[in-house]
Length: 504
Ligand code: IMP
Image 1 (cartoon, rainbow, N blue to C red):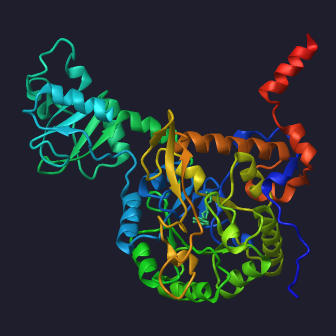
Image 2 (cartoon, helix red, strand yellow; image 1 turned 180 degrees about the vertical axis):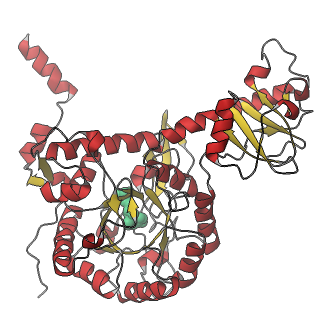
Image 3 (cartoon, rainbow, N blue to C red; image 1 turned 180 degrees about the horizontal axis):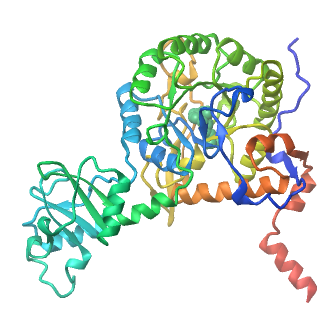
Protein backbone atom coordinates (compact mmCIF):
# COMPACT_ATOMS: atom_id res chain seq x y z
CA UNK A 1 0.00 0.00 0.00
CA UNK A 2 1.10 3.57 -0.62
CA UNK A 3 2.46 5.62 2.28
CA UNK A 4 0.00 8.13 3.65
CA UNK A 5 2.03 10.97 5.16
CA UNK A 6 0.88 12.22 8.53
CA UNK A 7 0.07 15.72 7.36
CA UNK A 8 -2.82 17.76 5.97
CA UNK A 9 -2.13 20.09 3.05
CA UNK A 10 -2.48 23.59 4.50
CA UNK A 11 -2.72 26.98 2.80
CA UNK A 12 -1.45 30.34 4.08
CA UNK A 13 -4.97 31.62 4.72
CA UNK A 14 -5.35 29.01 7.47
CA UNK A 15 -2.85 30.86 9.69
CA UNK A 16 -2.67 34.13 11.58
CA UNK A 17 0.38 35.80 13.08
CA UNK A 18 0.42 36.52 16.81
CA UNK A 19 1.89 39.91 17.74
CA UNK A 20 5.24 39.88 19.53
CA UNK A 21 6.69 42.67 21.68
CA UNK A 22 7.00 45.83 19.58
CA UNK A 23 9.88 47.92 20.92
CA UNK A 24 10.40 51.61 20.17
CA UNK A 25 12.90 50.79 17.40
CA UNK A 26 10.29 48.66 15.64
CA UNK A 27 9.08 51.27 13.15
CA UNK A 28 8.61 50.65 9.42
CA UNK A 29 11.44 52.99 8.42
CA UNK A 30 13.89 50.80 10.40
CA UNK A 31 12.79 47.58 8.71
CA UNK A 32 15.08 46.11 6.04
CA UNK A 33 13.45 43.86 3.47
CA UNK A 34 16.81 42.83 1.94
CA UNK A 35 16.95 39.08 1.47
CA UNK A 36 19.46 36.55 0.09
CA UNK A 37 19.00 34.88 -3.31
CA UNK A 38 21.92 32.46 -3.13
CA UNK A 39 23.30 30.16 -0.47
CA UNK A 40 25.99 31.58 1.79
CA UNK A 41 27.73 30.95 5.09
CA UNK A 42 26.56 33.55 7.64
CA UNK A 43 29.68 32.83 9.70
CA UNK A 44 31.78 34.21 6.79
CA UNK A 45 29.73 37.44 6.47
CA UNK A 46 26.50 38.63 4.82
CA UNK A 47 25.09 37.32 1.53
CA UNK A 48 26.79 38.37 -1.71
CA UNK A 49 23.65 38.00 -3.83
CA UNK A 50 20.53 39.67 -2.50
CA UNK A 51 17.30 41.43 -3.36
CA UNK A 52 16.26 44.68 -1.68
CA UNK A 53 12.63 43.56 -1.43
CA UNK A 54 11.50 39.91 -1.29
CA UNK A 55 9.47 39.90 -4.52
CA UNK A 56 10.27 38.29 -7.89
CA UNK A 57 8.06 37.90 -10.94
CA UNK A 58 7.19 34.52 -12.45
CA UNK A 59 8.98 33.23 -15.54
CA UNK A 60 5.86 33.47 -17.70
CA UNK A 61 5.09 34.90 -21.14
CA UNK A 62 2.27 37.05 -19.79
CA UNK A 63 4.31 38.37 -16.87
CA UNK A 64 8.05 38.90 -17.19
CA UNK A 65 9.15 41.03 -20.14
CA UNK A 66 11.88 43.66 -20.05
CA UNK A 67 9.55 46.54 -19.16
CA UNK A 68 8.31 44.74 -16.07
CA UNK A 69 11.86 43.65 -15.23
CA UNK A 70 13.00 47.28 -15.28
CA UNK A 71 10.08 48.48 -13.16
CA UNK A 72 10.54 45.72 -10.59
CA UNK A 73 14.33 46.11 -10.29
CA UNK A 74 13.80 49.84 -9.79
CA UNK A 75 11.62 48.96 -6.79
CA UNK A 76 14.19 46.50 -5.40
CA UNK A 77 12.95 43.11 -6.65
CA UNK A 78 13.71 41.08 -9.75
CA UNK A 79 11.98 39.53 -12.74
CA UNK A 80 12.73 36.07 -14.08
CA UNK A 81 12.45 36.41 -17.85
CA UNK A 82 10.68 33.38 -19.31
CA UNK A 83 12.41 30.61 -21.24
CA UNK A 84 9.46 29.55 -23.41
CA UNK A 85 10.89 31.67 -26.22
CA UNK A 86 13.92 31.40 -28.51
CA UNK A 87 17.29 31.94 -26.84
CA UNK A 88 17.90 35.10 -28.88
CA UNK A 89 14.72 36.84 -27.72
CA UNK A 90 15.29 35.97 -24.06
CA UNK A 91 18.84 37.28 -24.39
CA UNK A 92 17.48 40.46 -25.99
CA UNK A 93 15.14 40.95 -22.99
CA UNK A 94 18.05 40.64 -20.58
CA UNK A 95 20.14 42.97 -22.72
CA UNK A 96 17.40 45.62 -22.72
CA UNK A 97 17.31 45.57 -18.92
CA UNK A 98 21.08 45.66 -18.55
CA UNK A 99 21.36 48.52 -21.05
CA UNK A 100 18.58 50.51 -19.45
CA UNK A 101 20.26 53.60 -18.18
CA UNK A 102 17.99 55.09 -15.60
CA UNK A 103 17.75 58.74 -16.48
CA UNK A 104 18.85 58.48 -20.16
CA UNK A 105 15.75 57.99 -22.28
CA UNK A 106 15.70 57.26 -26.00
CA UNK A 107 13.35 59.91 -27.34
CA UNK A 108 10.07 58.43 -28.51
CA UNK A 109 8.44 61.72 -29.53
CA UNK A 110 10.24 63.09 -32.58
CA UNK A 111 9.22 65.11 -35.63
CA UNK A 112 10.91 66.88 -38.57
CA UNK A 113 11.15 70.73 -38.69
CA UNK A 114 8.86 71.13 -41.72
CA UNK A 115 5.92 69.26 -40.24
CA UNK A 116 2.83 71.35 -39.31
CA UNK A 117 2.42 72.34 -35.64
CA UNK A 118 -0.88 70.41 -35.58
CA UNK A 119 1.15 67.17 -35.90
CA UNK A 120 3.06 68.05 -32.72
CA UNK A 121 -0.22 68.52 -30.88
CA UNK A 122 -1.52 65.17 -32.14
CA UNK A 123 1.72 63.48 -31.05
CA UNK A 124 1.52 65.08 -27.61
CA UNK A 125 -2.05 63.86 -27.19
CA UNK A 126 -1.08 60.34 -28.24
CA UNK A 127 2.03 59.97 -26.06
CA UNK A 128 1.30 62.41 -23.24
CA UNK A 129 4.82 63.86 -23.76
CA UNK A 130 5.00 67.62 -24.03
CA UNK A 131 8.69 67.72 -25.09
CA UNK A 132 9.31 66.77 -28.71
CA UNK A 133 12.76 66.37 -30.24
CA UNK A 134 12.99 67.95 -33.68
CA UNK A 135 15.46 66.08 -35.84
CA UNK A 136 16.47 66.44 -39.48
CA UNK A 137 14.43 63.44 -40.65
CA UNK A 138 12.02 63.21 -37.71
CA UNK A 139 13.65 60.02 -36.35
CA UNK A 140 14.96 59.33 -32.85
CA UNK A 141 18.63 59.21 -33.83
CA UNK A 142 19.13 61.67 -36.68
CA UNK A 143 20.70 65.14 -36.40
CA UNK A 144 19.08 67.23 -33.68
CA UNK A 145 17.82 70.60 -34.96
CA UNK A 146 15.74 71.80 -32.01
CA UNK A 147 13.35 71.07 -29.18
CA UNK A 148 9.64 71.87 -29.08
CA UNK A 149 7.83 72.06 -25.75
CA UNK A 150 4.25 73.05 -25.00
CA UNK A 151 5.59 76.42 -23.78
CA UNK A 152 6.69 77.24 -27.35
CA UNK A 153 3.17 77.60 -28.77
CA UNK A 154 -0.38 78.56 -27.86
CA UNK A 155 -2.60 75.83 -29.14
CA UNK A 156 -5.75 77.96 -29.51
CA UNK A 157 -4.07 81.15 -30.75
CA UNK A 158 -1.24 80.08 -33.08
CA UNK A 159 -1.76 79.03 -36.69
CA UNK A 160 -1.45 75.25 -36.43
CA UNK A 161 -0.75 74.84 -40.15
CA UNK A 162 2.59 76.65 -39.84
CA UNK A 163 5.74 74.44 -39.67
CA UNK A 164 7.33 73.52 -36.37
CA UNK A 165 10.52 75.38 -37.32
CA UNK A 166 8.62 78.65 -36.74
CA UNK A 167 8.11 77.71 -33.08
CA UNK A 168 10.84 75.45 -31.71
CA UNK A 169 13.98 76.41 -29.79
CA UNK A 170 16.80 75.84 -32.31
CA UNK A 171 19.73 73.60 -31.39
CA UNK A 172 22.10 76.64 -31.17
CA UNK A 173 20.10 77.97 -28.23
CA UNK A 174 19.80 74.67 -26.35
CA UNK A 175 21.93 73.41 -23.47
CA UNK A 176 23.35 70.11 -24.77
CA UNK A 177 25.70 67.40 -23.57
CA UNK A 178 27.78 64.86 -25.39
CA UNK A 179 27.43 61.09 -25.16
CA UNK A 180 29.50 59.61 -22.32
CA UNK A 181 28.42 62.17 -19.73
CA UNK A 182 27.41 60.60 -16.41
CA UNK A 183 23.92 60.98 -14.98
CA UNK A 184 25.30 63.03 -12.08
CA UNK A 185 26.98 65.46 -14.51
CA UNK A 186 23.83 65.64 -16.65
CA UNK A 187 21.73 66.39 -13.57
CA UNK A 188 24.18 69.16 -12.57
CA UNK A 189 23.79 70.75 -16.01
CA UNK A 190 19.99 70.65 -15.78
CA UNK A 191 20.10 72.16 -12.32
CA UNK A 192 22.64 74.93 -13.10
CA UNK A 193 20.85 75.97 -16.29
CA UNK A 194 17.35 75.64 -14.79
CA UNK A 195 16.27 73.37 -17.67
CA UNK A 196 13.61 70.67 -17.83
CA UNK A 197 15.31 68.58 -20.54
CA UNK A 198 18.89 67.95 -21.63
CA UNK A 199 19.44 66.41 -25.10
CA UNK A 200 22.47 64.11 -25.36
CA UNK A 201 24.14 64.06 -28.79
CA UNK A 202 27.09 62.31 -30.40
CA UNK A 203 30.07 64.06 -32.01
CA UNK A 204 28.17 64.40 -35.31
CA UNK A 205 25.24 66.10 -33.57
CA UNK A 206 22.90 63.10 -33.81
CA UNK A 207 20.40 62.71 -31.01
CA UNK A 208 21.23 59.83 -28.62
CA UNK A 209 18.95 60.35 -25.62
CA UNK A 210 17.23 62.86 -23.39
CA UNK A 211 17.65 63.48 -19.67
CA UNK A 212 14.67 64.98 -17.86
CA UNK A 213 14.61 66.96 -14.62
CA UNK A 214 11.53 65.01 -13.47
CA UNK A 215 13.49 61.72 -13.77
CA UNK A 216 15.95 62.96 -11.18
CA UNK A 217 13.10 63.11 -8.68
CA UNK A 218 11.89 59.72 -9.90
CA UNK A 219 15.36 58.29 -9.25
CA UNK A 220 15.32 59.73 -5.75
CA UNK A 221 11.98 58.05 -5.14
CA UNK A 222 13.42 54.58 -5.86
CA UNK A 223 15.75 54.19 -2.89
CA UNK A 224 15.62 50.37 -3.05
CA UNK A 225 16.70 50.13 -6.71
CA UNK A 226 18.48 46.81 -7.27
CA UNK A 227 21.62 47.04 -9.38
CA UNK A 228 24.74 45.01 -10.09
CA UNK A 229 28.33 46.09 -9.36
CA UNK A 230 28.28 48.25 -12.51
CA UNK A 231 25.09 50.07 -11.48
CA UNK A 232 23.06 48.21 -14.13
CA UNK A 233 19.60 46.97 -13.15
CA UNK A 234 19.37 43.43 -11.79
CA UNK A 235 17.57 40.78 -13.86
CA UNK A 236 17.02 37.03 -13.60
CA UNK A 237 16.22 34.40 -16.22
CA UNK A 238 14.58 31.00 -16.30
CA UNK A 239 16.07 27.93 -17.99
CA UNK A 240 14.71 24.58 -19.09
CA UNK A 241 16.49 21.24 -18.80
CA UNK A 242 16.89 20.89 -22.59
CA UNK A 243 18.94 23.72 -24.10
CA UNK A 244 20.35 24.90 -20.73
CA UNK A 245 24.02 24.89 -21.76
CA UNK A 246 23.56 27.10 -24.79
CA UNK A 247 20.83 29.26 -23.21
CA UNK A 248 22.62 29.59 -19.87
CA UNK A 249 25.89 30.69 -21.47
CA UNK A 250 24.13 33.19 -23.76
CA UNK A 251 22.25 34.67 -20.79
CA UNK A 252 25.41 34.95 -18.72
CA UNK A 253 27.17 36.64 -21.65
CA UNK A 254 24.27 39.13 -21.78
CA UNK A 255 24.87 39.97 -18.10
CA UNK A 256 22.08 38.05 -16.34
CA UNK A 257 22.30 38.20 -12.52
CA UNK A 258 20.47 35.07 -11.48
CA UNK A 259 19.31 31.87 -13.20
CA UNK A 260 16.63 29.39 -12.19
CA UNK A 261 15.49 26.09 -13.64
CA UNK A 262 11.83 26.40 -14.47
CA UNK A 263 10.09 23.08 -14.05
CA UNK A 264 6.71 22.05 -12.67
CA UNK A 265 8.51 19.22 -10.84
CA UNK A 266 12.18 19.72 -10.03
CA UNK A 267 12.78 16.55 -8.00
CA UNK A 268 14.34 14.86 -11.04
CA UNK A 269 17.63 13.51 -12.28
CA UNK A 270 17.32 15.84 -15.29
CA UNK A 271 17.51 18.83 -13.04
CA UNK A 272 20.53 17.45 -11.19
CA UNK A 273 22.43 16.76 -14.43
CA UNK A 274 21.47 20.12 -15.92
CA UNK A 275 22.45 22.05 -12.82
CA UNK A 276 25.84 20.36 -12.41
CA UNK A 277 26.71 20.67 -16.10
CA UNK A 278 25.66 24.29 -16.26
CA UNK A 279 27.66 25.15 -13.15
CA UNK A 280 30.70 23.50 -14.74
CA UNK A 281 30.20 25.57 -17.90
CA UNK A 282 29.46 29.03 -16.50
CA UNK A 283 31.53 28.95 -13.30
CA UNK A 284 30.39 30.25 -9.93
CA UNK A 285 29.55 33.91 -10.54
CA UNK A 286 25.81 33.65 -11.26
CA UNK A 287 23.50 31.84 -8.79
CA UNK A 288 21.48 28.91 -10.15
CA UNK A 289 18.17 28.08 -8.47
CA UNK A 290 16.27 24.82 -8.73
CA UNK A 291 12.69 23.67 -8.35
CA UNK A 292 9.88 23.31 -7.98
CA UNK A 293 9.70 20.96 -5.03
CA UNK A 294 7.24 20.54 -2.15
CA UNK A 295 8.93 18.04 0.18
CA UNK A 296 12.01 17.87 2.36
CA UNK A 297 13.29 15.04 0.15
CA UNK A 298 13.02 17.33 -2.87
CA UNK A 299 14.91 20.05 -1.01
CA UNK A 300 17.67 17.68 0.06
CA UNK A 301 18.08 16.30 -3.43
CA UNK A 302 18.37 19.72 -5.05
CA UNK A 303 20.75 21.07 -2.41
CA UNK A 304 22.97 18.06 -1.73
CA UNK A 305 22.96 16.39 -5.17
CA UNK A 306 22.23 19.15 -7.68
CA UNK A 307 24.02 21.81 -5.58
CA UNK A 308 21.54 24.57 -6.38
CA UNK A 309 21.93 28.03 -4.85
CA UNK A 310 18.29 28.50 -3.91
CA UNK A 311 15.21 26.31 -3.89
CA UNK A 312 11.85 27.19 -5.38
CA UNK A 313 8.76 25.70 -3.70
CA UNK A 314 5.31 25.06 -5.15
CA UNK A 315 3.35 22.54 -7.18
CA UNK A 316 -0.26 23.07 -8.10
CA UNK A 317 -0.97 26.30 -6.22
CA UNK A 318 -0.66 28.84 -9.06
CA UNK A 319 -3.76 30.90 -9.82
CA UNK A 320 -3.87 29.66 -13.44
CA UNK A 321 -2.74 26.16 -12.50
CA UNK A 322 -4.84 23.05 -13.07
CA UNK A 323 -2.07 20.51 -12.34
CA UNK A 324 -3.81 19.23 -9.21
CA UNK A 325 -7.07 18.72 -11.13
CA UNK A 326 -5.34 17.14 -14.12
CA UNK A 327 -2.81 14.92 -12.37
CA UNK A 328 -3.66 14.73 -8.66
CA UNK A 329 -0.23 15.93 -7.62
CA UNK A 330 0.93 18.85 -5.47
CA UNK A 331 0.78 20.12 -1.91
CA UNK A 332 -0.85 22.97 -0.02
CA UNK A 333 1.66 25.80 -0.31
CA UNK A 334 1.87 26.53 3.44
CA UNK A 335 2.59 22.89 4.25
CA UNK A 336 5.24 22.77 1.54
CA UNK A 337 6.96 25.94 2.78
CA UNK A 338 6.84 24.80 6.44
CA UNK A 339 8.25 21.33 5.67
CA UNK A 340 11.05 22.68 3.51
CA UNK A 341 11.91 25.58 5.82
CA UNK A 342 12.33 23.10 8.68
CA UNK A 343 14.64 20.98 6.51
CA UNK A 344 16.57 24.09 5.40
CA UNK A 345 17.12 25.03 9.05
CA UNK A 346 18.34 21.48 9.79
CA UNK A 347 20.73 21.70 6.84
CA UNK A 348 22.03 25.03 8.17
CA UNK A 349 22.64 23.54 11.64
CA UNK A 350 24.54 20.68 10.04
CA UNK A 351 26.65 22.60 7.49
CA UNK A 352 26.56 26.29 8.45
CA UNK A 353 25.23 27.02 4.91
CA UNK A 354 21.99 28.97 4.60
CA UNK A 355 19.91 28.11 1.51
CA UNK A 356 17.29 30.73 0.55
CA UNK A 357 13.77 29.54 -0.26
CA UNK A 358 11.41 31.04 -2.82
CA UNK A 359 7.68 30.40 -2.36
CA UNK A 360 6.24 30.27 -5.88
CA UNK A 361 2.57 30.63 -6.82
CA UNK A 362 -0.81 30.84 -5.16
CA UNK A 363 -0.20 34.07 -3.27
CA UNK A 364 -3.49 35.87 -3.65
CA UNK A 365 -3.21 38.62 -1.09
CA UNK A 366 -0.69 40.65 0.88
CA UNK A 367 -1.59 38.70 4.03
CA UNK A 368 -0.68 35.41 2.37
CA UNK A 369 2.65 36.92 1.33
CA UNK A 370 3.36 38.01 4.89
CA UNK A 371 2.51 34.56 6.28
CA UNK A 372 4.73 32.89 3.62
CA UNK A 373 7.67 35.07 4.68
CA UNK A 374 7.00 34.41 8.36
CA UNK A 375 6.96 30.65 7.73
CA UNK A 376 10.47 30.72 6.31
CA UNK A 377 10.34 31.84 2.68
CA UNK A 378 13.12 34.33 1.85
CA UNK A 379 11.44 35.67 -1.25
CA UNK A 380 8.20 35.22 -3.15
CA UNK A 381 7.54 34.53 -6.82
CA UNK A 382 4.24 35.74 -8.25
CA UNK A 383 2.56 35.61 -11.62
CA UNK A 384 -0.96 36.99 -11.35
CA UNK A 385 0.08 39.85 -9.05
CA UNK A 386 2.50 41.19 -11.67
CA UNK A 387 0.41 40.22 -14.74
CA UNK A 388 -2.17 42.72 -13.48
CA UNK A 389 0.20 45.67 -13.57
CA UNK A 390 0.70 48.28 -16.27
CA UNK A 391 4.22 47.00 -17.04
CA UNK A 392 3.37 43.36 -17.79
CA UNK A 393 3.84 42.59 -21.51
CA UNK A 394 0.16 42.36 -22.49
CA UNK A 395 -2.32 44.96 -23.73
CA UNK A 396 -5.19 46.13 -21.51
CA UNK A 397 -8.70 45.15 -22.60
CA UNK A 398 -12.03 46.61 -21.53
CA UNK A 399 -14.92 44.37 -20.57
CA UNK A 400 -18.20 45.82 -19.27
CA UNK A 401 -16.49 49.07 -18.43
CA UNK A 402 -13.64 47.49 -16.46
CA UNK A 403 -9.99 47.09 -17.42
CA UNK A 404 -8.38 43.65 -17.59
CA UNK A 405 -5.09 42.13 -18.72
CA UNK A 406 -4.69 38.70 -20.31
CA UNK A 407 -2.92 36.12 -18.12
CA UNK A 408 -2.18 32.57 -19.23
CA UNK A 409 -0.31 29.64 -17.69
CA UNK A 410 2.89 28.25 -19.14
CA UNK A 411 1.11 24.90 -19.34
CA UNK A 412 -1.79 26.29 -21.37
CA UNK A 413 -2.21 25.69 -25.08
CA UNK A 414 -1.41 29.33 -25.62
CA UNK A 415 2.09 29.13 -24.07
CA UNK A 416 2.84 25.53 -25.07
CA UNK A 417 5.82 25.38 -22.73
CA UNK A 418 6.29 21.60 -23.07
CA UNK A 419 9.82 21.85 -21.64
CA UNK A 420 8.34 22.83 -18.25
CA UNK A 421 5.91 19.91 -18.12
CA UNK A 422 7.56 16.91 -19.82
CA UNK A 423 4.30 15.02 -20.36
CA UNK A 424 5.62 12.59 -22.97
CA UNK A 425 8.74 11.61 -24.87
CA UNK A 426 7.47 13.72 -27.74
CA UNK A 427 8.31 17.41 -27.69
CA UNK A 428 4.75 18.64 -27.25
CA UNK A 429 2.10 19.45 -24.69
CA UNK A 430 -0.32 16.50 -24.57
CA UNK A 431 -2.83 17.99 -22.13
CA UNK A 432 -3.16 21.42 -20.56
CA UNK A 433 -1.93 22.18 -17.03
CA UNK A 434 -2.81 25.85 -17.11
CA UNK A 435 -5.64 28.12 -18.18
CA UNK A 436 -5.85 31.16 -20.43
CA UNK A 437 -7.65 33.94 -18.58
CA UNK A 438 -8.06 37.65 -17.87
CA UNK A 439 -7.18 39.37 -14.60
CA UNK A 440 -8.30 42.82 -13.38
CA UNK A 441 -5.86 45.60 -14.22
CA UNK A 442 -4.26 47.02 -11.09
CA UNK A 443 -2.26 50.06 -12.31
CA UNK A 444 1.46 50.82 -12.13
CA UNK A 445 3.71 48.19 -10.54
CA UNK A 446 5.33 50.69 -8.20
CA UNK A 447 1.99 51.64 -6.57
CA UNK A 448 1.11 48.01 -5.93
CA UNK A 449 4.54 47.01 -4.64
CA UNK A 450 4.66 50.04 -2.34
CA UNK A 451 1.43 49.02 -0.62
CA UNK A 452 2.55 45.38 -0.28
CA UNK A 453 5.94 46.27 1.16
CA UNK A 454 4.38 48.80 3.54
CA UNK A 455 2.13 46.05 4.90
CA UNK A 456 5.04 43.59 5.25
CA UNK A 457 7.06 46.21 7.15
CA UNK A 458 4.15 47.06 9.40
CA UNK A 459 3.41 43.42 10.31
CA UNK A 460 7.09 42.76 10.96
CA UNK A 461 7.01 45.62 13.48
CA UNK A 462 3.94 44.06 15.16
CA UNK A 463 5.92 40.84 15.51
CA UNK A 464 9.07 42.59 16.74
CA UNK A 465 11.30 41.96 13.69
CA UNK A 466 13.50 44.36 11.75
CA UNK A 467 14.86 41.90 9.16
CA UNK A 468 13.38 38.95 7.30
CA UNK A 469 15.88 36.66 8.98
CA UNK A 470 14.65 37.91 12.38
CA UNK A 471 11.03 37.57 11.22
CA UNK A 472 11.65 33.84 10.58
CA UNK A 473 12.97 33.46 14.12
CA UNK A 474 10.40 35.45 16.08
CA UNK A 475 7.19 34.82 14.11
CA UNK A 476 4.52 32.84 15.98
CA UNK A 477 1.52 31.63 14.04
CA UNK A 478 -1.80 30.15 15.02
CA UNK A 479 -4.08 28.02 12.90
CA UNK A 480 -7.52 29.54 12.40
CA UNK A 481 -10.91 27.87 12.70
CA UNK A 482 -13.70 28.57 10.25
CA UNK A 483 -15.45 30.66 12.89
CA UNK A 484 -12.30 32.79 13.34
CA UNK A 485 -12.44 33.53 9.62
CA UNK A 486 -16.07 34.64 9.95
CA UNK A 487 -15.18 36.76 13.00
CA UNK A 488 -12.32 38.43 11.13
CA UNK A 489 -14.20 39.19 7.92
CA UNK A 490 -15.84 42.51 7.24
CA UNK A 491 -19.61 42.64 7.73
CA UNK A 492 -21.61 42.75 4.49
CA UNK A 493 -23.67 45.81 3.61
CA UNK A 494 -26.86 43.82 4.42
CA UNK A 495 -25.50 42.90 7.86
CA UNK A 496 -24.56 46.51 8.58
CA UNK A 497 -28.04 47.65 7.46
CA UNK A 498 -29.64 45.10 9.78
CA UNK A 499 -27.46 46.20 12.74
CA UNK A 500 -28.42 49.82 12.08
CA UNK A 501 -32.13 48.94 11.83
CA UNK A 502 -31.97 46.88 15.06
CA UNK A 503 -30.44 49.78 16.96
CA UNK A 504 -33.22 52.20 15.93
P1 IMP B 1 0.39 32.82 -9.38
O1 IMP B 1 1.28 33.82 -8.74
O2 IMP B 1 -0.58 32.20 -8.41
O3 IMP B 1 -0.31 33.37 -10.58
O4 IMP B 1 1.31 31.59 -9.85
C1 IMP B 1 2.43 31.75 -10.69
C2 IMP B 1 3.19 30.44 -10.74
O5 IMP B 1 2.37 29.38 -11.28
C3 IMP B 1 4.41 30.43 -11.64
O6 IMP B 1 5.54 31.02 -11.07
C4 IMP B 1 4.61 28.95 -11.92
O7 IMP B 1 5.33 28.29 -10.91
C5 IMP B 1 3.19 28.42 -11.93
N1 IMP B 1 2.66 28.24 -13.29
C6 IMP B 1 2.82 28.99 -14.39
N2 IMP B 1 2.11 28.52 -15.42
C7 IMP B 1 1.48 27.43 -14.98
C8 IMP B 1 0.59 26.49 -15.58
O8 IMP B 1 0.20 26.60 -16.73
N3 IMP B 1 0.20 25.46 -14.79
C9 IMP B 1 0.60 25.31 -13.51
N4 IMP B 1 1.38 26.20 -12.88
C10 IMP B 1 1.83 27.24 -13.62
